[in-house]
Length: 297
Image (tube, rainbow, N blue to C red; front, side, top):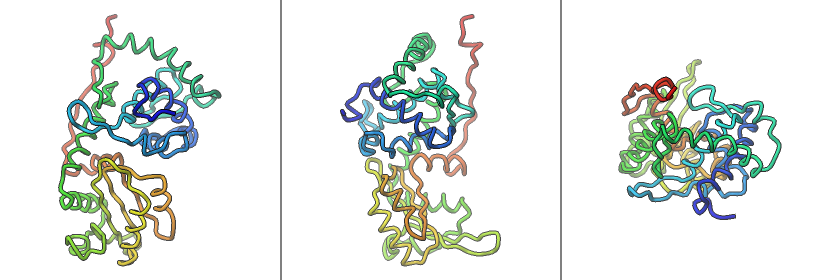
């Protein structure tokens, strides 16, 4: 099989359709788009995760992942063909048609495109074509744009400032940050932060923090092992590993191995948390015009 970046857009979408349906089935028929996307990346669908997460330089010089764009458009195609629906923003759900589909990837693509391509053609007179590093379909473009800008800004921070940002985020998650461990540039045993969390029964647990400001490479299992070693040095009860990139399948397995589970926060989840806690960001309310304004009739 060709490398993902060497496929045409239509070939990429054809490849992604069946894995998306299968991931939704695995996740119980309903999940966030982020959960489905991560499942497709690390799942056994014939394309190495390193290939799906490989970045590409756009015309404006910025890095982007072709996979992200093709994934968004594939979701839209499946929605047009009524194999999935969106019960709310950021969520996707299988319809009866999606739950009962039983065929090959090519059969699925043919059935979807038979419905979606005429709809795209009709829709094209109302929407602008997307840039190569942005999906402008419906409201997803707005959501993806601010996330891309956030991750770009985070990757532009110095390592020290990014570590400070991660400590601020964990602090918003009700963790009392230690004033010394992980704050100094050396002698911290490989940690980027340390804190204490009090449970309802007044039991205090210790939390170790690791921050990796990576834009290209996946965090691999050896990085998890090194972090766990630093956790053991300070006898941390829990670990939080934050990256602007993502985690390899082996890294996810390593994080769940042993008596001390490590919580993994990748770039997508990081954006979710920044929005949730409004950390160094300001929410902006906007509105979309309804069909009344865009329909000629």
